[in-house]
Length: 297
Image 1: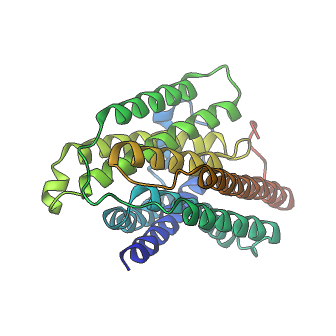
Image 2: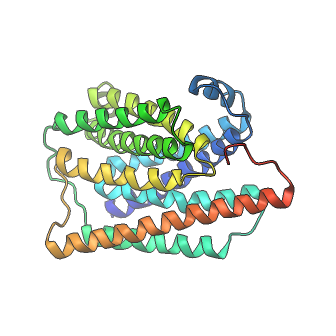
């Protein structure tokens, strides 16, 4: 029963976070190319649609945190991949059009792949959480930060490459944040959790991920499958850290590992298909409305 509640809370969280992100992405698309990340953030913070998206994200994140409190990271975090499906639905609704059949098919593929992965991996939390190993947490933070800085500072590089680097950094930081929050939420009560070092570290890593995501979404709105990269990197990092840091268990027999890899490949294929079809529909909508595409598109 606890696992079912955790899954439901994770789905609600994925829906809220993805829908809010779509609102923020549309707000970012309404502004001209900024000269810096600071200027981009200053502009989006003045838009009501961005704040509406942030409110939806907060609700979704609350449900997601509850899921982390109940279930293992290796179970909860992969469910966030469904956020791409919810985001697709939200994008269609905001654009005032029906859900495309190809998008619907890709969404079904993504969900089936995720269901297969969770069934095969069968992640479980330990009876008693061990003392978290700090080394893997620091390593992921340093690598994600380095990749993100490359994406921010690579002024001479193509925007698709920079967006991909920023999306990888975002996924890394979000996976790290999930592990840190799960560590904090294992405390005896909420007060102890909030004043713990994992909670403080999670606030820092979530802020880093959020900052990189804003820039990635802006740069990659036409040229890079940003959501697909974030949506696959995030759970991959979280599952790995869940096993290495939190002592969580997944099936590791050769047959199970092959099945997990194949299921993950199906999920990735579905996310890429969703992203590509979404971009194609966006181009079609712009052409039909006569909207001028950005110079980098």
